[in-house]
Image (cartoon, rainbow, N blue to C red; front, side, top):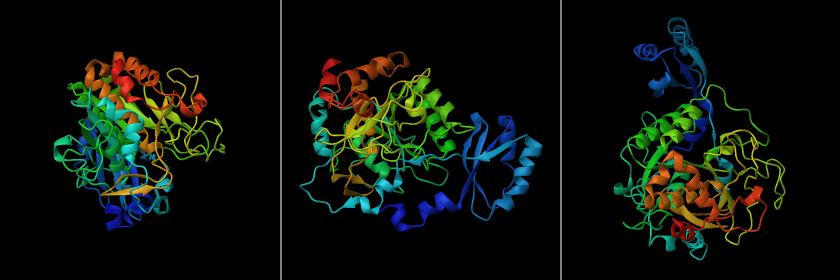
Length: 418
């Protein structure tokens, strides 16, 4: 598997540890635009959000003193506010560390087995997800993989300044994209749940401003009439309920995108054990923040045999019972031990499956099958109808609702009920 991380092993650590991101919020768009004419020494603008009057500036380690004068100027002349650009976590990066991969064996289960179990293959007689866009908001997508031919790639995919959305710096985004909407039509190894859907790559390092930029782009597409589904496999790795991030632009952008008609799916998280949960226990909760919202679908993880993965985050969710929230997870995807899947530029096997990261895109794919058949399900007023259809046709696995939600997807039954 060749990724940017293989070519430069220090890249991810550099992104995480050495460089610092600062969010500069201006009092007006005019002030932001005027500030961009000022030369900054030892730093670069990575994300510009003119409508939100925000810049994200990356400052390498040791260069912060050089930026002090510039930041002071911004505050003095433009009444700017400067805070650290909050960063979310890829769903438990250690879960996808080197020791998690096992030698590939063609006898091991793969995405094909999951596609069969959740009834996607039988659903394709009625829908393959055509005329729908699935946005994979992740580490990028390996454009060299035949599962992602040029014909499937959305031309307005997003990456930060100087980056390419069709490269994958870790491999994780390619996994999620293959599960949601990979295709064998041009020589790929796997079909995803919705093999005819287009793929939008939102390549991100999970900073608040990057996520806001991606969701602003998705809202724009939805307002232009495109039917957009967003698959998100990131969160916060913590064993206690986190406070909401301060000064967020991502959450307002998420609000705007949902209001525009973007259908949003989130992984529940891989944190049941981190909060002290037992393998078969249904509490305590470890589903955090916006994943508790009633206008998103939140997805846990079960095995091929129907048992729960011990890591899959349980509900009912940090904000259960509050206005605008709902019991979580909504349902669970399926991921097998030693499961074979696209990861970066290669097919690899993961000892503990693909986590809730690999389950979220299954539900995004199912939503694409349904919206392709009934485009009106993408209208915000029909969101509850879509969500209820997905939940009501799920197959219970016999677990507590806080573990499995309504059960696993049944794509065949869902498309037959449309």
